[in-house]
Image (cartoon, rainbow, N blue to C red; front, side):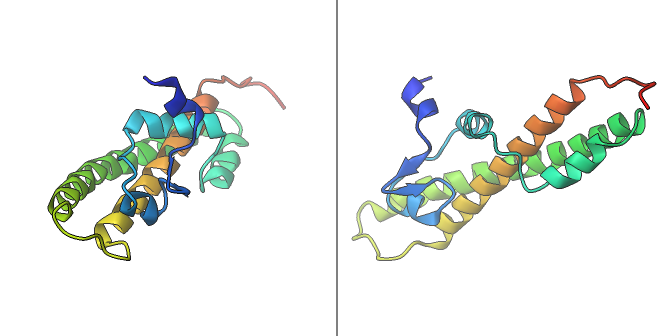
Length: 145
């Protein structure tokens, strides 16, 4: 993979990939690995960070059980988001192909908004998954007081 893609945020025309204008202005569709790598590089923990921290503070074995349950929920939601992301990406490619023969509009369309929303959902999903996997990789002392 191109190292410049990993070191630079996913931006185009002054907008990040989570903004509809990124796609409206012709920003390329980010690959899932690029989104995941951007999350890890940023250190972002996702909107569920507080909920994950509460589960992490539980005593064992409840901690691990709760974290595994959260991980299963996050993974299922992320899988749904990825399936939808792929559909919307195809729609955007088709839209761009169709628009190539027309003059560009002055505002973004539904497909641009849908793409930015799915990007944001996947970004959060990868953030949650990364945090959960990191926490589940640490075995706490079962006898700690």
